[in-house]
Image (cartoon, rainbow, N blue to C red; front, side, top):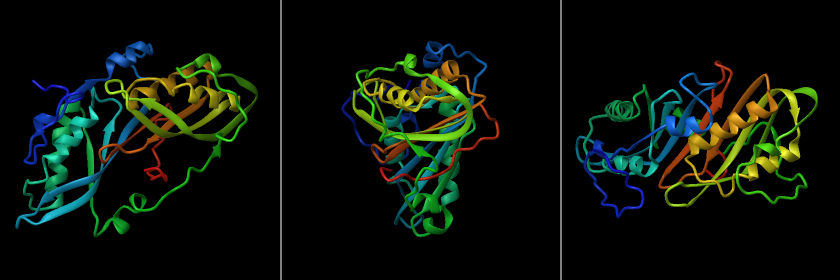
Length: 275
C-alpha cells in the first residue's frame, strides 16, 4: 500500500519505482463544495516537469521537460512530492527513446489516477521548435486586477465578497495575487489566476478581494481552483465561466488546473514569468 511521503524523511530512489506515486481522491474536497458525480465543469490539470532525466541505451544522461495532462474526471489527483520522487526514480533508469519514457509515465499516471493521461516529453535540444511555450515567457491576454485600490482584511475564502454590477460583459480578468498553502506542510503556493466569463458584470474590486481571501487557505491546487469556480458560478451566475490557475513550481513541478463550463474550452499552454 502506498504511503503519503509528505512530512516524512525522504529517501531518494534513482531506479524506476512506480510505487512511489501517491493518490489523493478528488471526491472528498468536491463533497465539501456540494459537487457530486455530475461535474459542473470540464477541465484538465496541466503539470510541467522541468527536471526530468534518464539514461539512454548507452548509459548517457538525457534531460528533458515534460507536460502531463490529467483530466478533471480522474478519480484521484497525484500528491506532488510523490510525483517528484517518482520522476527522480527515472534518473538511473535506461530507456531506448523518448517515446518509451512517455508511454511508461502515461501508464503509471493512468493507473494511479484511474484515468487516461497524456504525456509529452520534449528534449532540451529540440524544445524551442517542438514546444515553444516551454521556452518563452508569456503574458495573459486580459485585464489585470492587482493595481485596484482595495482595502483587505479577509484572508480565508469569503465568497460573500463576490458581487455583480448592472451590465452583461464578455471579458478576461486576471491576478498574480493568488496564494494558497499546502494542506500538509503549510508551505505557500503562489499562482496567477485567470478568470474568463460571459454574463453579469463581476465587481472587480470585490473579485480581487475574494482572490486575496485565499491567502491563508490550506488545500491542494486543484481543489482551490474548483472552489473558486464553484463560488463564482454560484454567486455571480455567469453564462460561461473558465478559471485557470498557473502555479509556480516547487521541486521542479508546476501544477496548472483548468476548469470551464464550456466543453470546447481548452487551456492556453503558456509559461508565465514566475514559472
